[in-house]
Length: 236
Image (cartoon, rainbow, N blue to C red; front, side):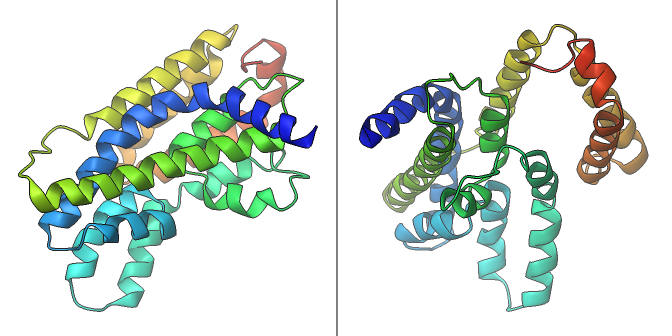
């Protein structure tokens, strides 16, 4: 009976991961190819994908691993690049309660895309929620890791032009945004996020707006949650 719930959760989770697969496959390939072109063995991007598992940071690791040893600088860069995950964790506090041994892995695997899927997914009542969240996270990491491995082997043997491939991730987030907007009766959260992001870009610039924008969005949604929820501003 337990196995039945596990496999049912996998079947329910798999369709939610397909948009991420389309993005991770091409980006993972480009990452693996970039590592191979930089002179690393094909298995290196695979191992880094398993250990670090942070797309933006992994791309930066190409230059970091080729530069001189500077652990403090690496820590500061990693913290700044991945600091947005602090806010993902805050948003997932309720959803991660009571998940037992799965919770540490779900925290570790909470990437941008996994957060978008697990936070907005509509999980049916007859589907085991902890296993659903686990499968989404594990599938995403498998997509990224094995795509990076494949890219490493391709980059080591064939020339490959990766120009423009990073737009795949942008396209995927646009699709997720539209899907979430269609679930809402009112588009208050999308409007709030858009306005605060634009203001943050104008004040802090395109390179430094993400954390201030997320702080602003978290503050506004936290203070206005009840009236927004009452007006149907959150997806059900």
